[in-house]
Amino acid sequence: MAAKALSFQVGDNVVYPKHGVGRVIEIQSSEIAGAKLELYVLRFDKERMTLKVPTNKAESVGMRKLSSEATLKDALLTLKGKPRIKRIMWSRRAQEYEAKINSGDLVSIAEVVRDLHRAEDQPEQSYSERQIFEAAISRLAREVAAMKNIDEPAAQREIEDVLKAA
Image 1: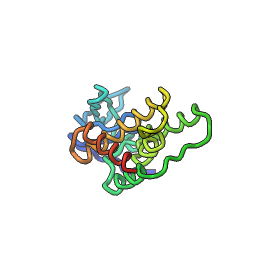
Image 2: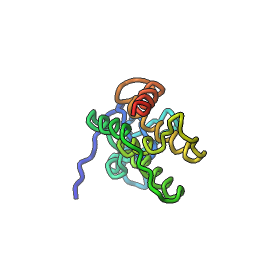
Image 3: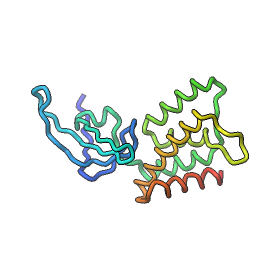
Image 4: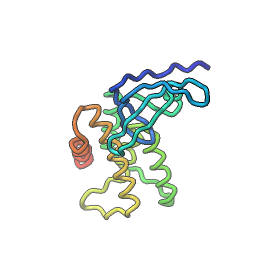
């Protein structure tokens, strides 16, 4: 099973599922346990974190280029939809929401934002609901910002405008 290695260049914005949008700052070679490894060095400015990913494992961990325009349109369309809140215990729903956020899939993240968004006339969220909502909207805003070449607060305002219009 020869998987085609994803090729990222220094300076590319990439999405790492568990951490969101990062930038490839270096491609380095290292020798670890006697084996020569090529590594992508990713920088996540928001978390002040650097991550090294072996180039041959990039695809299997879900690292990808920024979403396409079509995927962004799907995500924005998802935000306009009717919230789908399952009638299961909050702890189970919270696990499902976390899994969607960590999947790195833009449309899944948009579903979490849509489902947890509260209009001003609706009852307030619990602390844990608010935390998950903030994580999801931040992750969505970072990718939208990177795609549109704007800052994160502007991207977040765009997303909130779409939610308010829905």
